[in-house]
Image (cartoon, rainbow, N blue to C red; front, side, top):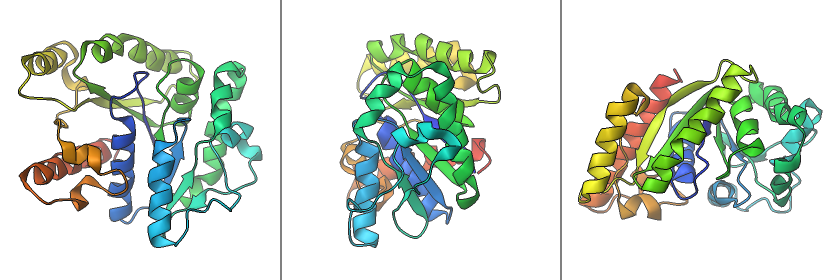
Length: 260
């Protein structure tokens, strides 16, 4: 099982949008997908529960299943992820995830052990992360093989990239996860009508080079509206078709980089 974390400490940069579309992309490729929601806002979980409702007939609220906070039990986990169709399963976010920030450092390695116990049943794992630095992000990065960093072209998001890359480097250099690979910075919600967006993206490419992914997600309403299905399944006009094409290209690039 290959594990991809979608990470940025800034909220509103499109982490969940990327995570849900990567999950749908994997499902449509016939892969067995484990979706892990480590964000207490639970938006990734809502998407997968909606998929379960369409394919199984209920949201699984009455079932006991593995949750995000329970991953911190490591390989002592007893429950299983919630099935969401034939080839997808969910480790849902729960309220107890807010306590991760105060956990001791040694606990942050437990989710990696928990996912290793589940690995034989899945081909790929997608982790959606909380918009915060520190322990919650460290736990996701320690558990992952790869990390993708969505970023919008606003000054606050760009200014925060230094802290994000420092945290990734710390995980690697302290050998908490020395093999972690950054697949790239993904420019998201880029508005080509705004000079700031165009200039910011050009500057990021100049400064970071190949760290910035070739694929770009432009600012299209269709991408934001597709919360319970992949963007490419809601085509109904030129904007929707372009959004679908861009999202599918980005997902394909990410999977190619990860050799999935």
